[in-house]
Length: 471
Ligand SMILES: Cc1ncc(COP(=O)(O)O)c(C=O)c1O
Ligand SMILES: N[C@@H](CCOP(=O)(O)O)C(=O)O
Image (cartoon, rainbow, N blue to C red; front, side, top):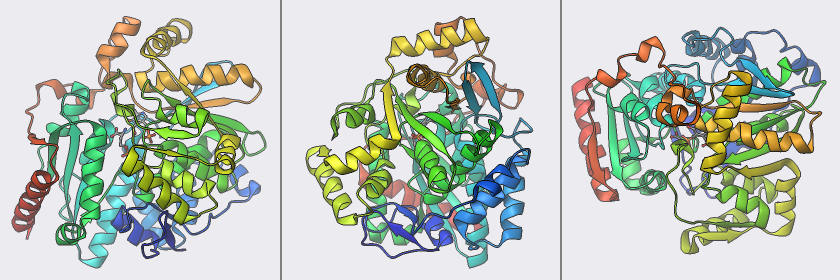
């Protein structure tokens, strides 16, 4: 199966090529030419199976034989063997028909580990087969960076450069990026916001001479393989609540729209999902878009859920492509408008298609703190601020439909955001033992301005140096 770009002007690629390519050469995002489907019987058969077994089947369908099945199974098993919970992504009930899907039992305590632990192995495998190396440049609002650094540290086939917004990530998030002592990883603090970091990464992808010179690749959710790996937990969680015989709904703390898009993909593959609720913090561009049809950028505010402090929600482009009947010219027009004027309007028909499947709700800082307190007081369950946004939005959705089980994606461990959690609940969450000395470890980072030329120069210089050392 080939993968096509949302902007329609880049070559169609196999799964492995899309994995190494990241952003399409026309600036668009890859997705499969058609959606593979699983029968209701097969989905029902996932009940009681280990997470890795479900992943093998779901990712086998999405990669369509492009990675040989023995190798894929081996990488999946290794990727999830190190998770701190035997179920990998367990489900916990915290209220009537209200469940949290805990995605934070991987090494860096965020949902990013679920895809990234596999992505590191997949990339290393494909690069090794081809005798190639790659330079990964990623943008992070806090979690992708740590997860990528953990997954790729020490690999000979890749150099990793992570751009994060200086002063806008939590101390734990920053230290997870800056204290890893491996010559192939580089944490770069950029004087700007996450959107600036993401724009720099996209600009590097769109600078074709630079891209080709350094063998640029990406591990943000612009990379299709990231989304593919995130589809799996929608199946495991829905099946554990009676799916596919019983429909479930999901609420997803959302920023770059990758995680919730993975839920929409699971639905295309045959998983019965009633509603998908987009939960945002006060950076509520997606909630406003669903309400008004106008995607309109405003300044980004720093919140207690820094990983969701985002205005340019990359994966929304994939949904726009689908909502416009896969009309790449329409997507190009919208993206051009966004670039030129910071806004675009979605026409009535595609907007209706989006509203038919998605709801959206924004949570204020006060609501986030109140939700952390409430869940602790009433259920003895400590939420991180991102998951609290999901739970707050889910409680509202349950008022409209209390009969359908609601699964909230628990996207981070509370110990990644101890100050916000303690201020709201009075409880100081503890880091798991493998990170207990994180605050004493030596930091290594580079501070750069929000300047494409300077960032490219740094990457060029250091990617070469590591290549030389490894050669
Ligand atoms: C903890 C946490 N929650 C939610 C999100 C939002 O996820 P997405 O960007 O896939 O919408 C992120 C960042 O991606 C995150 O790190
Ligand atoms: N919230 C993310 C932002 C980048 O998202 P990605 O899913 O596109 O990698 C983060 O924590 O870095």
